[in-house]
Each structure stands twice: as structure tokens, then as C-alpha cells.
Image 1: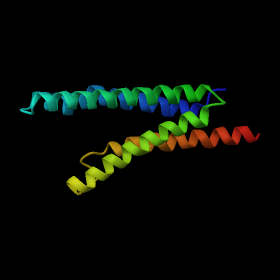
Image 2: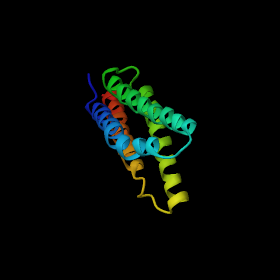
Image 3: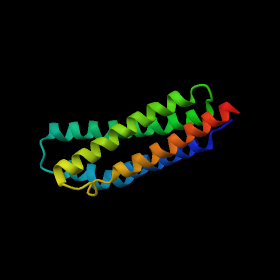
Length: 131
């Protein structure tokens, strides 16, 4: 049986991935590439940018798979929760330490929302397993 809550988390993650690709690419990655940074730094920036893109896409796929795979559901979902918690903490840490606010880089909010929905899916899974 499909866990609709975890599937919703997977869809939200896929939307976040699309926002990262289309919105973030124009707002963050393209300006870095157009800057006067050293070409090697631009290369590293591209590797990091596309690495995050790959991570987000994989996490989306893992959540969608977890929604279908009863036996592996919790493990797969916890893997994504751990990854997204790390991303949320990194955004929050640098927002506070570099800018004194959480709201210049609010991406942590999206990660926490997906974590919350994922945790709801785990709760639902456990509740159904008991019945």
C-alpha cells in the first residue's frame, strides 16, 4: 500500500528540486559564473551546485520509492530526513552567523516542512503496522 504522506513529501521534495534548478540557478549559480571569480572557483561552484541538484533529485526519488516500499519505508525515509536536517542546519547556521538572520536564506524552512511531512508518514506507517 502506498503511504500517501511520504509520497506527498516526495512530491514536495521534487518541487523543491525544480525550484533549486530553475529559480536558484538564475539567482545564484548564473551570477557566480558571470562574476570575476577565478575559473577554478567557478568550476568548484558548478560541481557543488550540481552536486546539490543531484542530492535533491535523489532524495525526491528515495521518498517516492519509500512511499511504495513497505519493508524499507522507514529506513529510506530516515535517510532523507537526515540529509534534509543537515541542509536545514547548514542554512540556519550560515544565516545566523553570516547575516544575523534566518530569513536571508530561508531554504531551511522548506527542508523542515519536508521533514515534518516525512515524519508524519513514518507515524502513519507505524500506526498502520500496529493494526
